[in-house]
Each structure stands twice: as C-alpha cells, then as structure tokens.
Length: 325
Image 1 (cartoon, helix red, strand yellow):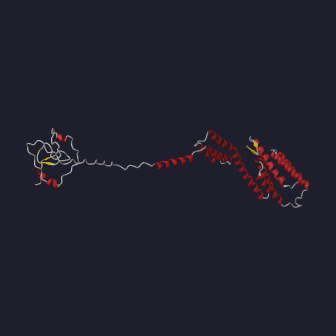
Image 2: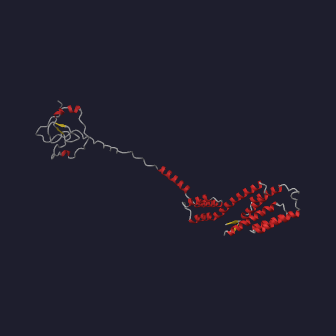
Image 3: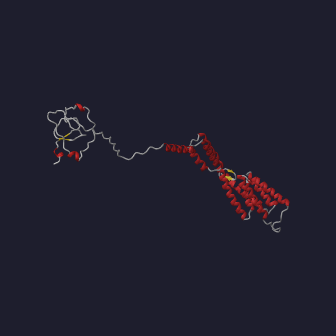
C-alpha cells in the first residue's frame, strides 16, 4: 500500500500541504502553525504563498524523517527555502466584439479638407447670385418666363437679398405686356402672310396689297412687311397688260391720277374714314381708269370696313384698330 494512502494529516499551508505522520503544532517543512493559538517566534512573518506543486512520485516514495522525541516541544527549523510567488495571471479577455482602432489624425485632416472644398464650392457668393439674377432678367427680355420664374424660386432658397429678388420680380412683371404683344403680332403676321400668299397664288395682287395694308396699319411696318410689299409689286409688274381692244391702255396722266387716288384712299383708311376712301376709289374706277383692278379691290375693302363699323356701332360696341370690341 502506498504511503500517501496512509497519511491522515497534512500541512494546512496551501503552498506546502505535505503529508505529516501525526498531528503536530508546527509543520516540520515550512514551520506553519497547524492550529489557532500556536505561534512560531522564528517565523512571525508568514511565508509568501506559492502555487501548489504536487509532490513527485520520488518525493512521495521517500521515507519520512523520524519523528522527534516527545520531550522536544520545539520542532526543528525548516530547511527548505520558500517557493517564489507565481507571476500574476493575465486577465482573461473580455467577451464581445473586438474594439476598433482609433481613427488616425491624417484621416481626420483629409476629411476636414474635403468638407472645406465642398463648402467653398457650394457657398453662394454674392457675385454668383448677382450673375444668376442678370441671366434671369435676360431670359425675361427674350420672353422665356418659365426659365425666369424657375430661377426666381430657386434664388429664394439662397442668400439672395430681398432687394435682388424684388428687382427680378419687377423685371418679369415689366416684360410680360411686351411679350404678350409680341406673341399677338407674331400670330397676326402668320395669318397675314398666309392670306397674302393665297392672294398672290390666285393672281390677285390688289387683294394681297389690301391685306398687307391692314396689318401694317395695326402693327406698323418692319423688314418683313417691306419684303412682302416688294414681292407684291414684283408680281404686279410681271402681270400681262390688258389688250387694247378690251381695256385701252390709259395715258400716263390717268395712271398718275389713279395712283394719287389710291394713295389718298389708303390714308383715309388709316384715319378710319372708310366712306371717304370708298368715294375716292369710286372716282378712280368710274372717271379716271375704268379697268384699274387695284382701285376696285381697295373699294371692296373700304366698303367692307364701313359695313363692319356700322354694324359694331349699332350693336353698342366700340370700334378701334379696324375691329369691333
């Protein structure tokens, strides 16, 4: 049977814990008192606790030293040296996800630089706002009101001053009537050009001249009307002259008189005196040049305007610009 199986007593010191043959007051190996009230004056300071090391098989099989005589009250001084204290154990790593490393300084500086560039680019400077306002005002002059109004709405969300916004709004309001008039004139010119082309295609230069005269009286003359008038005159000059048997060629004095009457009739139509214009053209047809088609066409136009005027006034309307309102 192994000796360790027969051991009943052991040293109470955790660093020693060696088997003892019997109950003693002090451990013969480390000198530790084995029960309360027993103090070893030679070992007042307790030895440093060391990690327990189990005895090897050779130490366990070695014979125990002989027990001291009973008359000896003081145990022998322990010979084995104190074991060194074990190194402190490292704390176990905390459970959970690994900690992120702190962001380095150069990355912070890089992010600040990018933000600074973005701020400089997006900063609405006063010069940029003023440039946008000038562009919007130019759009109103070109009658692009949708673009100008959209820019005005966008500028209200910037640092534009109330004076700048008010100036742009005033430009939009001032340009609206003129653009509306331009729009109406463009439509009237399209209708006039279509009517004149149709009259010229039918060979009726007098009707084309009368239709162009109505447009010029209301919307004034410009490069397009002058060009169309030259086209009418060129076609009139290219028209074949009537045969002498059917319509004798008038003398130069009669042609000049007819031209004078036509000019007077045009001035009378512009002044709104349609009856006077009709009378002059009647004189041209009956007394000066019976075959003058231009006098006849202008007379038809003057009579129509006179009838429209009478109908308008009798209906309680107002007549201006050769139309009833």
